[in-house]
Image 1 (tube, helix red, strand yellow):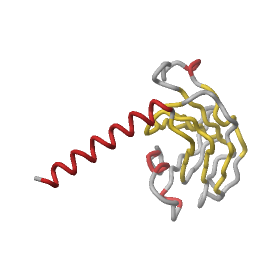
Image 2 (cartoon, helix red, strand yellow):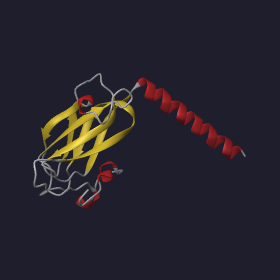
Image 3 (cartoon, helix red, strand yellow):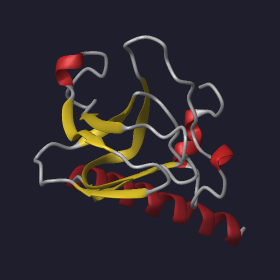
Length: 154
């Protein structure tokens, strides 16, 4: 976090101005900034949207996405991570949509790395839930719906 906190990446809607995104300062070393996102449920990513809208002079030149399935692997072990989107060039002030080749690996967490740092308005990951995640979320929804209906009946 420098000019803007990373949680802005997953804010609803499109960013209206640069200040509604995640903006980092340029580093003076060989490192890069990154953010870790925990997905709502385990799933497979099919489309990644990396939005640099409004970032004209401070957009990253490239970005990559890596995933890990924390149900069966250690998030802190670099060897557990797999590529979702290899390092890919980005344009400033652009909503980039990248189709992700079919992969058998589901992710619970995704890491966005930006090179050589810079601002990102939004990160969107589109895909499908794993079958066990679909069952779990469906059961949770049904239980919540029943609880709300019962409280309305009282």
